[in-house]
Length: 584
Image 1 (tube, rainbow, N blue to C red):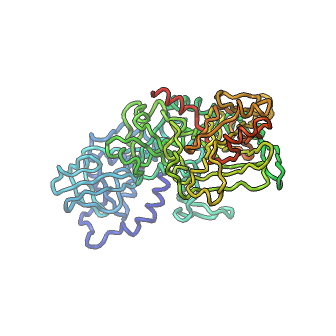
Image 2 (image 1 turned 90 degrees about the vertical axis):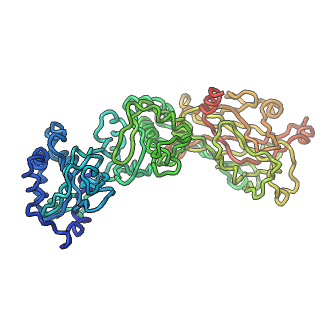
Image 3 (image 1 turned 30 degrees about the vertical axis):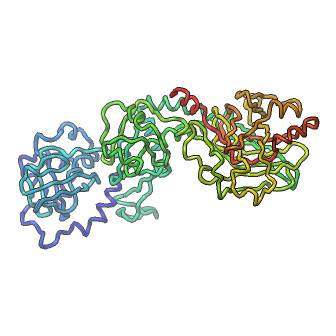
């Protein structure tokens, strides 16, 4: 890939730049190649240049600077056994840059070599104080007809960029195999050298390919960009397989057939449609699992959350390139095996375990405001609180992230109960629900939370709301829709609901705290199938303001309201609760 990109730049961007001005024309009578080939101390370097075929380029009129390692300072066995393309790209072009870079005055700058690697070039009139890529310059400013030579006391170490590393290292080929699935090559016609037309088809003597990677574009990183700087977790194959087994259990699609229900209103009549999704269960599960593992491994050092990585300090947060935040950076980085790996565009940590918290990666907290059908002759009102009553407590759920959205802009749906019977609303839950366990909350808003409530609800009752809740979901064991009933004193709930109207209020009903925006805990539930990636289906949460039974109507109506003011349904992975319990 880099070779293709280099061809594009070397054939166009620098053509004019490399024509030496008359006042800078060298006085030496020999070309760069003639100088190198005739210098005994550079015989090893000359042999490798010759093997790579670059001797012809160094004999051309194009101007270059060559930093040539002296004999006995080259890993000769390594480069003699390399194929010509690798030798040329990783060694020869690693020591050559466009134009002529003299040390005529103190210099301290970054040089981009022909293979687009970046090295610091420091120089003074005293050769002993000059260096390139950390290697001392033994002799400098050796002029040639088409450039200048500096003799090095060592190789400028070639370092992979992250993209090259993934393609070259077997320890991480589980990650590499996934990422490289999304690589695409496209001919760069503008920078390719056209050849003859054969059978009506344009051929090219020198084809330059543009490489792109849809997955890396999707997570907002460019791992082959030498001008970027990243920190990346590189899971070993063992770490990948361990994560794969853990994550995959959250993407269960049964036999590939998922059912669902859609509720809506036709004028004043509640309607229901049956839904179905047919998927390739094994393919979808595998694909989403690999994507979940690979998506949060890269951190840009230029991100303000991550600048401490390149400063050699410690921080309390990391943000991946796809904008996921992680609260345990020390733990993530401590899983490394061996020393950190220096890349040409950052630092890699080879890790034997991925210590991400599930709710910060593949299993996020979920909020839904999508309401379906309701039994009411009038539309529910959507209310946005412009002036929050400071006397009302804000939502507080232990373990839930601080940036809960309604802390700043609280909105809710208000359904004013009018029917004599049950008042019912269906909430179509998020399509990101996994085949996993969640703690489920209904966020209830008291009327007095809005300082201006009297402008739209002058007769508001400052009473607790009495309501029931159940969940409609697909059960792959029976291959039918099923219903789970929540119980205020039994977090596990029940597959059978209340038998009588009195049960709904005396035993099954939930009540909110009207002194605050209340996250009413309904219970825990494990969804047997995942809904991630489906086109149609999702589970539904049913909220009911039950009819007050006739015998106790006066009693209940004095204590409770049947109005529903719901700011959302919140699903929190049960791992958060377990994590909080373990930390106490």
